[in-house]
Length: 132
Image (cartoon, rainbow, N blue to C red; front, top):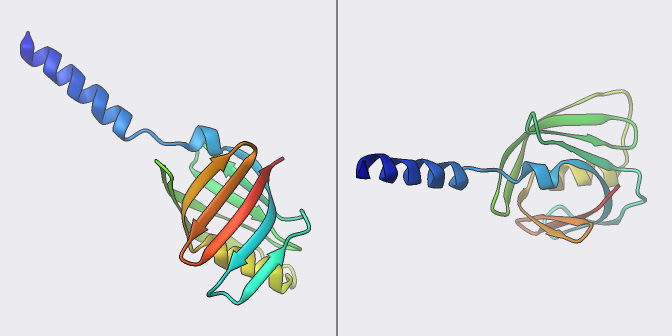
């Protein structure tokens, strides 16, 4: 009986330790600002770039000026997150600010939720999104 109880507790702790934070990140987020030391761009964004995080599929989509990109999200646990493998349409030419936003998104390794803001940060980058 002791074994069953111990195994039950271990199973619960394992499941809790592996839980993701996708539910609280899911939804549409409007890019507000971008600061980046190593990408040579600082942008006050005009609110037209929208990040869509899908909890169920653990994927993201981002609407740029003309094109859209989508990819997978790795992590999203305990403040860690990684955006991977974006595939983008190639309809025309996006602005330097839009391309810089995409480059910065791929350098993100952590997130912080503060009220209705999602702050993504990484090596010398910080992107602030507001819930839509």
